Amino acid sequence: MGDAEAFTRDFLPLFRAVPPTRPGVCRICHSGPNDRGDGEPWPTCASCKRTTENLSGYTEHVVPISLTARDTQLYDVLVRRKDPFGVAGRRNRLDFLAATVTHFFREHAGCLQGLAGGPFTMVATIPSTRTERPIEAFHHMDKVIGKVGAWARLHRPLLLQADDAYAPVLAARESHSAAYHVLGDGMKGARVLLVDDLFVSGAHVQSAASALIGRGATAVVALVIARLVNPASKDPYSGGIWQESGDRPFGFDRCCVCDRGAWQGRPAARQPARRARG
Image (cartoon, rainbow, N blue to C red; front, side, top):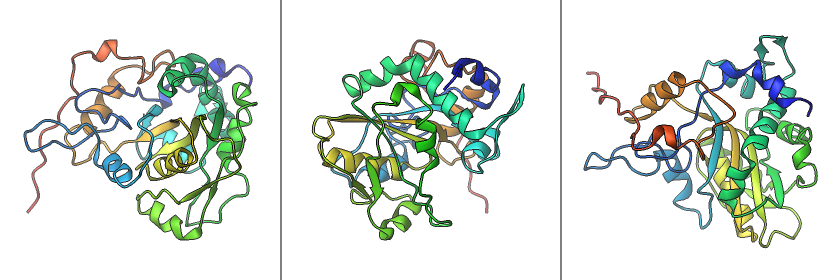
């Protein structure tokens, strides 16, 4: 990748700051949890609870570069495969994604490696399991990672979709430790950076992490370009998280791992309970 910093500078308005873990922010994916019976927030959101509770191994570390919501330009880039439009005009989508992860990793390799307990020994992507269209021979995130010089020696295809039977399971936002098959040997003691574009429920990320850990990986850290948030969610915190992320300018110099000072002692803003219509 060329000058990733200059490339991403034109697109800073597309990104939203991701809050660090604190009360009212899921400790895994950084979205909004529900409240317990005593009125205090659960440590994880409902999606992370559902996608991890039946797995023998999963990752505690999901690091989104940005938050996003439906009907935003970043969502269109990631899901609808549209080329982004910035100050300098329209740019190639894969180049944009590669510049994003390159710039972020350059700034926060230490944050990610700290979560893994040391330098990464492998970089992997998650195969597509989209049921509405044929699975591509080369997933677009493999093409993106191929443009990231820092990962050239570490990236190799590690995961294959194990069986078509698991595609509907993942589409239903459920995880399964057998959804992916790990290729080859040499996983014992590996520290894997698992890269994906969009984190929705965590079913794909946690299923992939479980497969890697089951084959001997010591640590799996998931780096995702964006965590999808529903600002109108029924949980008490997602709306406030989304509002706060827009109130604070996004910068690649900060991430949800190291940006704790600005949020110290501040729980996530709680939204008023929504009354049922009737």
